[in-house]
Length: 487
Image 1 (cartoon, one colour):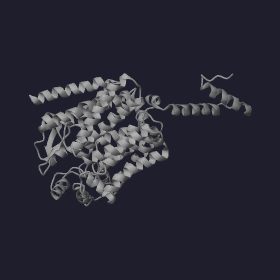
Image 2: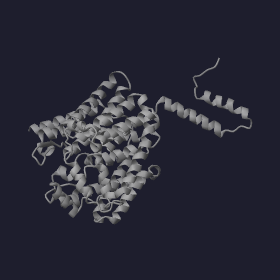
Image 3: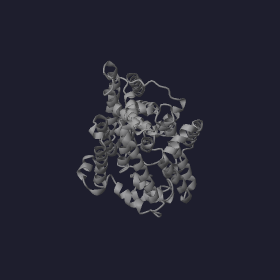
């Protein structure tokens, strides 16, 4: 009875959050629900887990085969998503041509199936991974992609974050689990504590960004209610990250959140030199602490020992099993078959990832995969940095998602199919459509664009007399300022 009352209160809290911070006006298509459902599943748990079906067989075999119910549902969502993209061929074609590095990475993943020891399993996993790209393309091909992305983040966070607290407090069979040593762990709507921390990390960063945008926006009575809603969401997200004891998510929350707020609030932080230094610093600090032994006290302050909860041992035994360092074992094919069971015996528990995204890519795709991932990271940052400097609405949040993905994969494998960190990473580095984003530019950026347009027009207009260029240029510049009058 108490649990039902808690669920009812949770529903009221969710409705109140929507009421306090109503969604911006605008039209988005019904296809929006496809990426919403896809992301909802992978930010929480599979449908079979929600319904409590399956999971009775061997854990290793279940990891390889998957659930027929989940496979059927995801196949339907993917088929519907492909149908939507076919109806948006023109917009999708532009997006695909503009995102060559992403397509190249997925193409290499498909080719790597040829040398996988389990090509049928690798193909099914690659086909599912295509769903991540399909859902991102649906969002970006919306008439107002920015509105669609805001609604996606708002609806997911308003539902999953409060529900996690209810599950943990009143439904421990759903919201808690136990470690091998018997210690209780918070999982909320997800299936393990690291997944809960990662989900709350993404939603918490989005809520902080939304809070800052509202605070810097219109003044008056109308902004108090949205500020209250986003403030509550930030507090709940941070509470879950802290209590889930996910050190990776906690560190990423402060690192990525700090850079996000700095670049959004301060003009100095958006200058190229300072921006590059900020990003390099927040990425090098955890990398140095984890891999170079510098700042080991910081690691201990986060509650981790020098082996990073056994991760160094996992890295050693996994790397010792590599047979093809150039091309890897094939897409998502390393943790399969006898190797999976052998590594589980050596480590003393079931393993299905290397707990390091870069090592995970190396194990499956080799150095060739690492090189393509590096291309993705460099190309993605080169796309995000101008958006931050121009202060677009999504620029600083995209940078926060980018930093989170880079730092999160130091101790967790997040560059994987259907992983929320991977999905939002792809969304952050994708080349975005221009129309809605134009409204988000700063006035200074708009003026620079106007001057560039005037200059281009002057260059294209070539009068016979060279002396006519200056008067023509002055006339066009004056046309940019209709309020300007000369005596």
